Length: 567
Image (cartoon, rainbow, N blue to C red; front, side, top):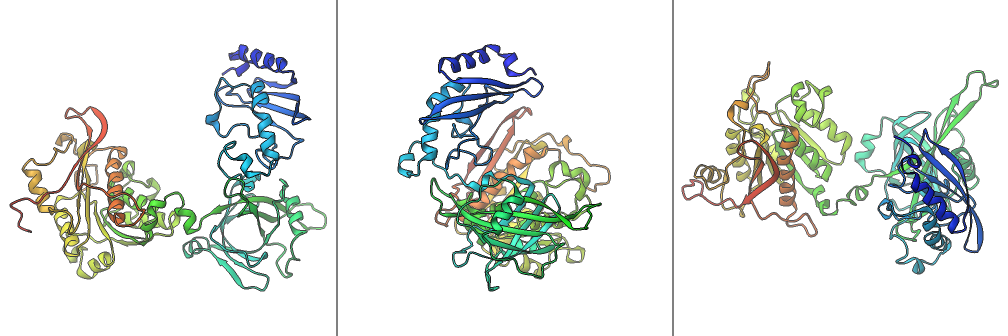
C-alpha cells in the first residue's frame, strides 16, 4: 500500500495550507514512504509561551489520529511523562477523518495545556474525561513481565521492608511472579497473598525489598530509577547472595479516580546479575528492567463482574464434560464459582478437540483431570473435585456408589447435567430431586441445528423430568431442530456413533446454560445476576431445510403433566 500522502495528496496539501493559514511555522522532518510515517517540527505560541513540538502522522492517517510530542513541557495531566506526547483526544472515537492538525492546535491544544497545568479539580470537571491517569501505566516495562499484588493490602502502618516473591519464571529479560508476603523493617508480616496464588507461584521464591516513595519517580531507565529509589531507602540488609536476582517493589501515590491521588501505585525493578565473558575482574553486571504490577486480589478479580460476586460461595456439580459440559466448567470458574465437582469417565480423543475447549496436546488425558489442571492454573480460586465415575453403570464397572454420590453432591447448590444421554437425564434429575437441588439439563441436537435447556427448581418448577418427557411427547413443546439421522458418524476406533456439529454452534447451548445456572444460583442474592422466568428453552440455529438463521430461543414454563406419577 502506498503512503497516505501519495494515496491522497490533496490531504497533505490541505494540512500544510491550513498550518500556513494559521501562522504556524513547520518543517517536514521525515517522509518515509517505506514505513508510511511523516513527521513535522512545529513552532507556535501557546499559553503565552513559545513551544516546539513534533507531530507524527501514522501510516493509517487520516483514519487514525496523529501524535503530538512536546519534549519541553512537563504537564501533570494529559501528557505522557516519558514519551512526552499530549492527550488531545479522550479516545480513538473522539477523532474523525475530518479533524486536522492545524484545527487541533488552534482549538484543542490551548485547553489541554490549561488543564494539564491546573491542579483545580473543579475547573477540570466536564472539560476532560472522567478517568484516572495512573502514572504506573507509562513506564517502559519489559515484555511479558508482571508481578502480582493485591489492591486490598493496607500498608499505611509502614513505608518499607522486605518481601517474598514467588516466581513462575524469572530470566534476564522477563519475569512472571507474585508477591507472597510483605514484611516491615522489624520482620513482622504486614500483607500476604491469597492462598490460591501462593500455591500457584511457589515453584521458586526470592527475597526482595519494598519501599514507599513520596511521589512517582519519573525516570524511564530502570538502572537510574533504582539508584534514585535507593537514595530514599534504608540500607539493604547484608548477607543476600550477590548472584541472586534482586526484585524491588516501589509504592507511590497515583490516581485511582479523576485527579484523586489516593491510591497506591506499584511497579517493580528486577536486577538480574549476568556474568560477561572477558570482563576483567569477573564481577557481575546487572541486567535491570521494569516489571509492571498486576492487581490479582480477590476484590480485584471481582471488580469487572460485580453481579457475580456471590458465586464464590456457591458449588456446582457438572455431570458430563463433553462439548457442552466442558465449556460450562471453564466459564463458571471464570465467573468466580467457589466449588466445582466434575464427573466424567471419558478421555480426550484427538478428533474431538475440534469441539472441545483444550487442544490436541491433551490427547489421552482424562477429561476431568485435564480440565482440573487447566482451571487450577488459570482460575486458582475455584476448588475443583474430579470423579471418573460412570454414572448409571454397575459399581463393579466403575459406576456411582453411595459414598461417591455423597462426596460429589453434599454441600452443592446446583446439578448441571451435560451427559447428553436420555437414559441418564431421568437418573440425574432424580438424584437432584432427592436432595432438593436445582437441576439443569443441556444438550445439543444432531448437526448442531439447535438444542434444549431444561431447569427444575424445588418448590418452584411445577413439572419434573417425567413431565417434561410427556409434554414433549404430546407436542406441547417446540420441535427440536436437528439434522437428519444419517448425519451420525462413527469415527474409526470409537465404540459408539456420534453426531456432527461445530463447536461454535454447540456452545450456544453451553453459554445459555451458564446464564441459566448463574441466574438460578444468584436469584435471591441482592445485586446479583438477574433471575430467569422460564424453565424450558429451545434453541434454533437452522431452518427445517438446514439453512442458517440467527440464533433464537423459544422459552416457557415446565408444567406438570396430568399423567405424571411423581406428583
